[in-house]
Structures are given as structure tokens and as C-alpha cells.
Image (cartoon, rainbow, N blue to C red):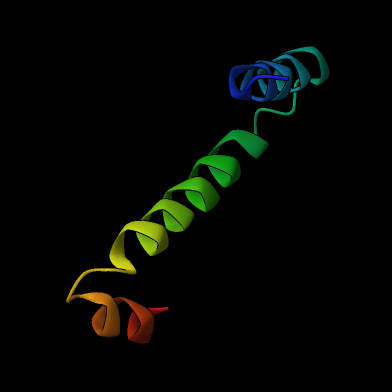
Length: 52
């Protein structure tokens, strides 16, 4: 199972079930996760963690 198939399956779920209100929520959670992952090894990490 490839990683792209997961995104395709989520997209198909949103399109078929018309759950468009979930899209901003999914994007926000993904963005916060990426910020935490990339900030973990940087000198900004203590400042990022105090914000969250």
C-alpha cells in the first residue's frame, strides 16, 4: 500500500460523502504535525513548544 493511496482514499471519502468541512481540519492537523517534526531538531524548538 503506497502513501499516495492513503491520500487518494481520504480525497475520495471527502468527495463522495461531501464532508468538505473536514478538509481544513485535516490540513491544520497536518501542518501542525509538520511544524513539530521539523522544529524538533532546530534551535527554535523551545520557543515552538511553549507556543503549543
